[in-house]
Length: 392
Image (cartoon, rainbow, N blue to C red; front, side, top):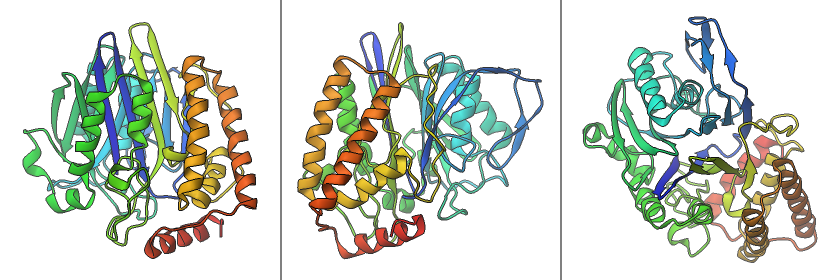
């Protein structure tokens, strides 16, 4: 489950996305340079092979570690794309493209938002959508919707099987796991869309997108816990899935925000900010650039390691049930981000500073142990994921 927002303001476009997936499904910032290819050569995507094009653009992707495609990303021409799962009454194709494949293909092949829209529309018609999209549950399948933007504007793109609907964005738009455009709304699966709390989250994100006046407002939108009073509010059936900053723990459905992205697009260029961690409510948005690849060490997977994503997970899972600890971390995080927005550090310096803060917070939490006042079913859910990740 995910949320993507876009706001069109004078002289700029703001984009933001939370990627919500399985809790141990680490997400990897991935840089790919521009390349020339033999047109028509076989290109293996997640589940299907399609013809390659003659040239692909340089991209920065936020990619679940096991997928060829990406949840969100940007290319060197200032195009950004985020995708959502949508649940429909239309059939899947055997071994078709996933929504994540389509994000990457749109960025690699589209030099403008309009070109990326056309790329995705054509690929859906040619190859269809299909194949497993889940990590814990490999058979989990869905269709996709997209928000595609550049400095000129943005488009909502929704799909149901091979059908595609497209709408330009006038001022603000959001997508949240349910079909919304009139041409396809009749294909919505109402039960699965309700379980995903799609309409509830979209109402929240649309209000945030319409009220956004800068990048920091989008940071706040992605950290929003809805009606939880600043903290995740859990429900037995889907955990804390009813707000943009999603926390897993439901008995029927569960999803966790595993990466977050904010972009500011202007005719002069694009600025991108990513967490490269789960739980944006406890993380820091760091500047990155498509043309400035970072060496972040071995990419994370679904077992705990010493890298940034899993070190942040150690902190997140230790303190998320303790309101006082979360408030302490958020206050210091906000001071750091205000300084960085005023005078952005280099990406390498920002990642190093964030890692040092995580290590310090972890050390402090070892001497002043946080409490955990989450419901019993949430604690049980996370204990099982900790064992699977080697954290127990």
